[in-house]
Each structure stands twice: as C-alpha cells, then as structure tokens.
Amino acid sequence: MKSTPKKYHDYDKDAFSISPYHNASRPRLKVQVRCRVAGKWVRRFFQNEREAKMYVDLRRIQLNNEGAQGVAALRATEQLAPFGKSIEDAVGFYLAHLKTEHGSIPVRQAVDELIANRRAAGLSKVYIGDLYSRLGRFAKSFGERSVASIATKEIVEWLESLNVGPVTRNTFRRDARTLFSFAIEHKHCADNPVSKATKAKEQSREVEVLSVDQARKLLSKSSRDMSPYWAIGLFAGLRPSEIRKLDWSDVDLDDALITVRASKTGRKRFVKIQPNLIQWLEPDRRDEGKVVAPVNFRRSYPADRAAAGLSDWPVNAMRHSFGSYHVAQFNDIPALAVQMGNSPEIIERHYRKAVRPKEAHRYWALTPDTVTGKDHGKVIATIAAASA
Image (cartoon, rainbow, N blue to C red; front, side):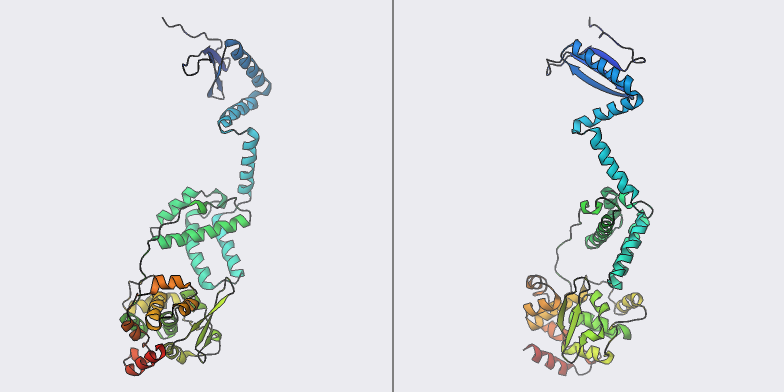
C-alpha cells in the first residue's frame, strides 16, 4: 500500500510543504519543497530532508521579515530566474519604458508635427499633400493612442486592412516608418515598430506604356491649363511631382533644355526638349511662374483621363512611355539615363524593346497640329531627320 507523503505544514498557516520526490532521471534528488507564494506554486528539489528544511526555514524567516513586499520580490525572482535576469534588470527595463511612454504624444499630434516639420524644410506641396493623405488614414485608426504604445503587430494588421496592392501598401509602410523615425528623433518613442513589418512583395513585370493613339487622345481631350502637364510627362519624362514643381525659369525653349531640380538632395539634371514638345509649350511660354497651374489639379487630372477614355492607367504611364519611345527612336541609352536620372542598366532592362521603331516615329510626331490632323507629313520628316 502506497504511503501518504508526510505533511509538515498546513497551507492555511504556512506557505511551504516538504514531501518525498522520485524521478529516475534525477536520482540524486530525494525531497521536494512546494511553496505557495502570492497564490503561485513553486517547487524546489534537494538531496535530503535536512537541506529541504534549511531552505524552508530560511525562506520563512525572509518572508516574515519582508512581509508582503518580500512575497512579491520572491515571486518576481522566481519568474525571472529562467531568463537569467534579476529584479534590478526588470526595474531598469520598465523604467525606460515608463520614461518613453511619459514623453510620448498622441499619433494625431505626431502626424501634425511631422507635416509642419516637412513644410518648414521647404518640401513640395505635392509631397506634403500625399504624406498627409496617407498618414491621415493612419491617424484615423490610431489617433489618440500614444506613439510609444503602437506595436509591430498592430502596424501589420493596419497595412493588411488597407486592401491595396503591394506597391501602394509599401508606400503606406514607408510613410508610417517616416513618422516613427521622426518620433524617435524627438524622444516620443524608443524604437520603430514599422521597421519590423515585412514589406509586401512587388511582382516584377514589364513596363506598360500608352499607345500612340492613347497619347494622341489624351492630348486632344486635355483641358487648356493641363496641356503642358501631359506634354511634359509624355515627351520629357519628368515625374508627376517634378512637373508640378517646374517653373518657367527652368524651361529654356531657345536652348531646348529643362532644368529639373531635386528638392531633397539639391541636385539637378537636364532634360532635352524634343522639337514636338517645343510646339506644345510655346503658346504658354513665360519668363517665370509655374508651368502647370490649373485652378484645381485634383479635379482636372482625373477629368482629362476620363475624357480620353483612359480609366485603366498604367503605373508611371507617361514616364514609362517617354523612356520606351525614346529608346526606340533615338537608341541612346546613356543619354536617356542622364535625362531620366536612372542608371543605364535600369533603362536597358525596362525600356529596350518595349515598343517598335515604327510606333516611336508616330509618337514623336505628336504635335498640336498633328493631333488635329495638320502638317503630319512635315513633322514626321523633321523627327526622322533629328534621329538620323
């Protein structure tokens, strides 16, 4: 008949009990102490009953001396032991967290401060508008939460909830990362949770361009004040943000050269103005002022595309069209790389063989006259001579 382990202590009166211990894999250990501290059970093992009693006596004295705080400290020590950490380590870690949390600010306030900072730095209205639009959606979800309290898991869940493609999702991720980097600089949080959120995989695919007929229709249906925007995008390959920042003082129609200034780096590059683009820009020529200044760009942009029947708009449609038709017409990759601000390798990989030379001749013959059916043969001859 199996004997009942001898009970040395009443749990209602004492936190400890001592009993025999049997484990074939640990034959040296014969006695166990079960300890109930702050409602939690802890076990310790010893070679004999004398060692076990000494442990119980020492712990009892310690608890009696330290009272409730001693109980909490003992429990904390037991919990930290498997990780090789002490109470001092835990206190230091938590104090750092509390200090950061105390100095944190709501997400909505952080967004406003970032926007104000970027505006003061002189960044473009287009960039600031796009940044505010995307971070506005972030603030709508986390507005009153402190920046320091946002975890990576929450960032990932928010990105997934956007229901957008991988490129757009990565753009939202980039702007959120910018927000937290700004917060770190200003001591509002200790680390950047967005950095640990995996980027979406962007599928590699061939560039898509507008056909010559699509480009013609877009130009013919363009509103008057948007015409320079479409013409520069199609025939000079500037990025949309670069076109909207472009000033007439940087457009030299006499020397056929556009100076593109990068606001972030302060660098500039030069883009050759092709003969057909000169014809598109000449009617609006001025010494200074914005080249593209519609009353309401955000309304005019989709309206022109809709009028041209271009609801399916390829990514970077105008820039990719310019690069592809330029390679097919002029076959000068190094020069194109300099004008587009890319490497020759990128130009070769993206734009070589994207369109046929025959279509390129038609593309570079698009002028205000040829779009309306005037002097088409004369312009074709001019373009062919320029590329010879």
